Image 1 (spheres, one colour):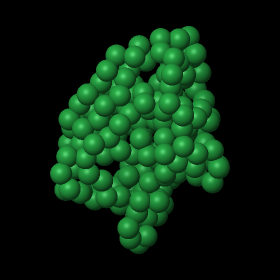
Image 2 (cartoon, helix red, strand yellow):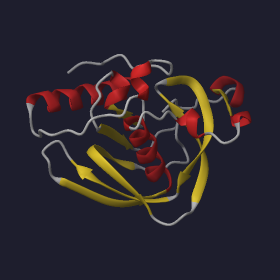
Image 3 (cartoon, helix red, strand yellow):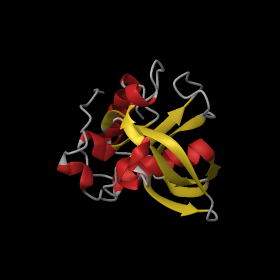
Image 4 (cartoon, helix red, strand yellow):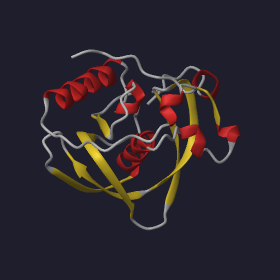
Length: 177
């Protein structure tokens, strides 16, 4: 399993819509997930989508235990989510700071649904169906956006809340994703 280079904003591959995964429990799929895990861990990310490493498939991973870089965030169970479907629960939105491994060194305030149901399958094709809130819901929405060719700056409502992490949070260590 390898650590793969992460594409950065400006690479046209990040704007493509990812294709559904049709074959499960294959060596290729397990290798992709392993590479994504290694890449996310190496970069201390909270999540990663396959398009971020140049693979146009509907595969995202995310998860976070306590991390001083995300002090306000509740733990999010490590998950491999394939062919995800999102269903907002209610209309309540919450604005929050986001960063991204594909937009390194920058942060912005992004509105996201506060309550969310997501469905999909794991690498073996077994169903996943969860109802989540807060940071967990935010992470899932951020990662699934990558499958639609959307980067978080496209969702920012007020560009005055977008900038370089070092300028926005001087003296603080803040995660990029």
